[in-house]
Image (cartoon, rainbow, N blue to C red; front, top):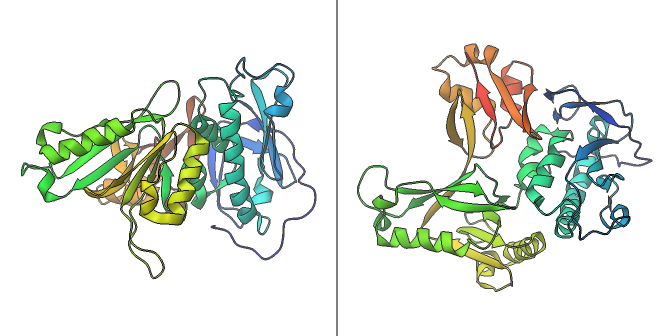
Length: 370
């Protein structure tokens, strides 16, 4: 993906535990600029181990068997419950590990396999009945160092294939064709908000005025909300233009009841393109959004007000747009906070244009400056 090297990761992956320190850090001191979690590590090996509260197993997992049936043992990523059944030991790349040539490529592949195992353990009740895959994934990513240019990949699975898992707080905007909307101002787009649902997953809610839509626009809204009402896992495939080897593709919205089905259907769509949306697979639904152009937005709080930005937006870009033509002044006072478990932690970074251009913002981040 983002880091390429010539030598190969070899030898024992030694690890040591880490302790909470309370702040993220954008660290440029190594070959790969990393986002360090609110922890520090004393390890000199390629991996580190963090103890996390991921939820207590459900009664469906027999006592005494959870160590074997709930554990995941990978070369780079590993997870195993402690005896109390609530705390988990999570192995992930250390700072030194990310700076070992070729680990990024190996970690990228293993992370995908690791998430699939997380999905299976979630279905088995290893994390409790009310803990979804996305919640477990976010908690794990929060606790490990990750390359600054890979945050979208690790948090939302947004990579080179052009799809993203939807999380609460995101928004989907459909720029409708002229025939589907009235001629009133601001009626040319339909906005859906992604909201959390109980016990797990997300749902779509209409966030723009329904009264401005004509009949075909209202039909599209009803079909979208109705089609995905029973499917808590949603994945958006972004629109793609034609290339020399691939035809163009409308945006697709995929819903599933389980992570396994979501991944199976995704494989079909990646192989067959838009036509893969026509195939049937139990416990899933797929819709081609041909009524307009689809864009994905993340909610970022800027000086106390919610604002919406495309994934990949950097702090530098937000400052340039919002700081009254004095980005240098804002740079000296700006603070960025990001979720860490059940609270927010400040991100520390060097206050220059290079660093703020490397700080990619995530859904839910909070920014403030004087």
